[in-house]
Length: 472
Image 1: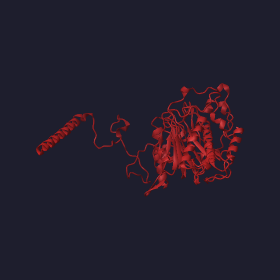
Image 2: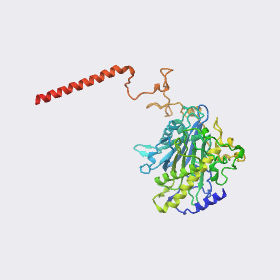
Image 3: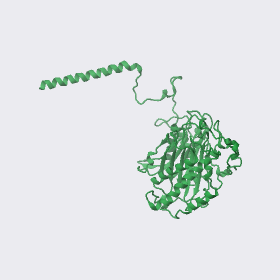
Image 4: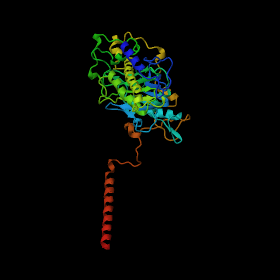
């Protein structure tokens, strides 16, 4: 560990003391080569994190929001074979979008992407977004993990209310880790996964941070000695006494223990000013960090996606400017290493839930000397409940309000939709797009209509031919 720390310090010192732009100021207490104050992505100035979750039946899922109050230039790199993502095309450097207001890392797979609607509404209420006409257009890209039916009910999913409450809880401070937010229902190579975060300070004051939801098909455990792959990248004893487990405990999870359909999703961020292409490149390089922490990675059953965010201002560092190459390479490499460390924190902070065993419960000798995390470093992530939602004018089972259907506080109220037949399927009450419907009993009517149309066409053709012959 000491040799790696020395190497990182040496690499950091190689950075030039000035940048093309101005990084948002970091804390004066930050030490180059070491983690920031919180050892979390929130050490990056201009980045806040909000999380909500529920582990109460029938739920085991949640939402994590990375919020940038002043927007952030953002890129994305997706390498898994089965992603659940939203609004990632606007991050392409070829497109005109200038930045994002927030990024969501969520649970509930494609269904949970609906939680971004709540984030967008919260932002709109505050006038945050790209000005368009008399309003704003909040930009909130997202990626979700597959956690459906893995300890919770398959239909117990996040909704717009979860996104609203998550971004509402965002703040710049310690990040709660483990079975929280988007990592609540996560699993990793047969073990319990979760949320992890880390940061590092570079010599010129640039801060790099990462947050990850580890929900991988691959394993974060080295089968040779059952240590965490990420442990090799530890900085400043951040894993607080983690050891290699005793040989008698080393029984790695079998491949059969790993569940199919996974995804590891993450955000890496810096306060160095980056163009959009450089932000995308930072996201791409950071996949190396996942590859160092999880093996195998980027399988056809994974949807591995990483977002890269820059909160810096001024002239951005550019990938095609040779004068910026050294600084960019240092930032990109730091982002990859920081993401590896964040994955390690996710595994150590996770706890056993149901049949999903945590790393520390599977290998107790590895964790027996780990010191408790200081109270001021634990962070917060409120639990979702019907009571909290009702108190705020929202319900977990609410449906979108019709135009003008609002409560006294201006919030949508649930529609009173009832099933006409108790035995009918759930979707029976969903309105169809057309006002006219047809059933199997309408066959004769449809056939008669088609024959009538063909008859009229034939009559019209006959009249045309007769007129032509008369003219001839």
